Length: 481
Ligand code: ATP
Ligand code: MN
Image 1 (cartoon, rainbow, N blue to C red):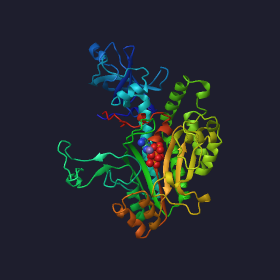
Image 2: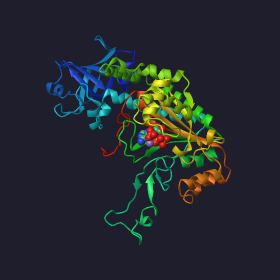
Image 3: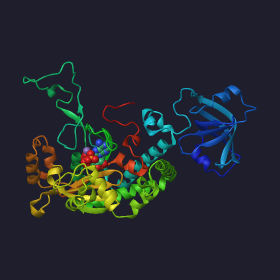
Image 4: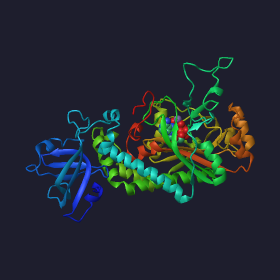
């Protein structure tokens, strides 16, 4: 017996057919109306049982969360709110759900509560919508790159290099903590460890991506990355997914163009393919905003915000221009920023990024040409910096409500400049010899960036906490499920 998915039945125009639906009970009303959801769509199908001919004990088992199989006739619905319904002939309970104990009752639950029962939250409309969109975005990313001829490269999760410099790393080891092998000087002897050296979980696939780009031309990674940064924010996870394209013969401008095109492509893909889900989340947000004061509400609803993003060019400005704007900005003058902007060279905090994007430009912004001192060693040094200021061809994309969504740069392709920079920063050049080989043999200008997948999902879904856009979030002191 095959089942039909609810999504297909709700669109059906042929009535009188015998169909089977399998799913979970959302509600059971008036001893006759079962709202069933099978995950194929946000919408439920209504199945109507004849309680006069159905065993009463069976009806009692139609509780929220129970798994059921119903077979019956698909008919046009007379009731309000649905076009079709099923007139049930056969009803089978596949799995009971004790109404007294099932935590998800048909009422509004807070996101905080749902986070504690993340193993069950998939069953709510909100998370059905969020994870459908997450899926669609992942698919769109692969499609975008595949259509352009980029090669999907699987860079290692366990890495032997600790010089990626993007954040604190998680150590990977099989050393017995109760019996640690030691060198004569008391330090840990990693030669005894699984890999014969100290290893970590990757914070970025970029360096390996560069190696592949120097052969394939255009590659990308899309995989999990790990950062042991102790930042308990709504924008940081200890385990998150990152998309990292790396392209030979691209300069910083080509790099920006690609990133903007990618972001617009995947947002358009979601608008086109997830309209029900976006509509649901839009209304959810509007509902939530009713709790807020008028002046704190968003100017645009979720779908308008996404369309706005497609229809406008991202603002491209240099770090120096950004500093000038920030210096003379109201919150800086009135000392409302936590970190005041006094001088060129300051690292931008999220309050500054958000001011530029949300208050000043009111649209996505790409910041370029940052001070070398606050950026990574592999970024391309600019020639002829004004007033002796040393800048690199970095580019960060800042999004409203999110802050940094993309971090990238043109890479330093000149061996001597790169080596000097690494020595200045005490990066072990010998250990990174494999990386430097790309600059020794057929080096070429190249660029790349990292797009944080969960930050993208946050933006598209309008959710506000990154813990709500990944199925099982890993954050400091939390690795449940
Ligand atoms: P931030 O300043 O926000 O911590 P970053 O400068 O450390 O970001 P990069 O090292 O450039 O970020 O990483 C590339 C992208 O990965 C970022 O633009 C962001 O979208 C995402 N990202 C970085 N750290 C995290 C994290 N802890 N959780 C989720 N996404 C992250
Ligand atoms: Mn960071």
